Length: 111
Length: 111
DNA sequence: GACAGTACTATCCAATCGGGTAGTAACAGA
DNA sequence: TCTGTTACTACCCGATTGGATAGTACTGTC
Image (cartoon, rainbow over all chains, first blue to last red; front, side, top):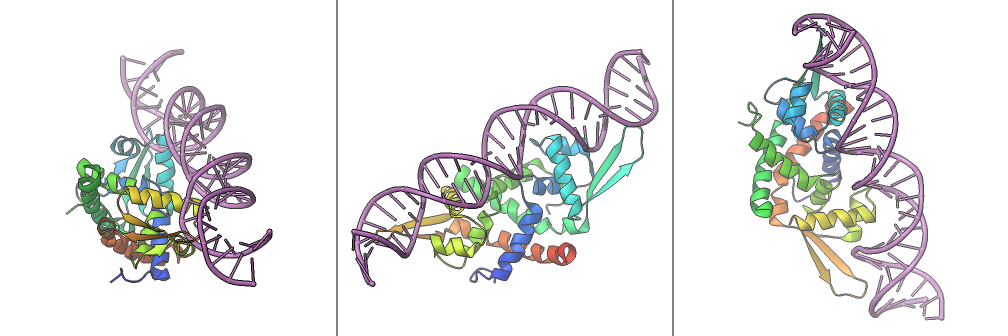
């Protein structure tokens, strides 16, 4: 059981996780990539609302944390493919719980 | 299964959840409250790094989303007690998954 | 030669965030 | 009378974020 203690060590690991996932975009990008590799423009279209600049920055941060892979193909117009790593895929459960909670939250609060 | 589709509806609910939980502090505050009610100063001490101003703002946002309750006692120096709501407590699973992932992440990346 | 296409990067600028300091109400104790 | 206590709010100001726009490298096509 987790609830029932406010254990500082647990808080630390939550803090670590939040640090790697900070911002509104990272989990959405990972979610998009969870169904397969994408190119930059595809992500830009799929994650609606994000600008190229921010997407580029977020992808860099995700790559640094080894949550995604970046593959560059040496083609005429450049092609870059992003895919989720095993470590990134291990967030599936978090995403899943967040999804369920989001549903409940919408039903309760947003209407 | 969630992974395997990049379903926009799923993305929406994740977006809803992220909106209610945005920032580095909200989940940490909820985690602290998950082990029982706290007063303002206690939270301020427990959630290390947060300033009074930001804590006050975050608590207000959490209250608006019905994730916490605020009880004011009419005492000499004011006493305010914050506690988690049922809806807030339903984030337990998210917190738990985040905790596990944070542990794995620290082991893998941070070292 | 002009243009299109991709994945960015750079620059400018406005908005927001967040830290620090100070102040408030109301009463208790020195 | 002066100070301390709690839970804030107000104000100032510098740092960060994020949007809009434009530019770059390279090559194939019209």
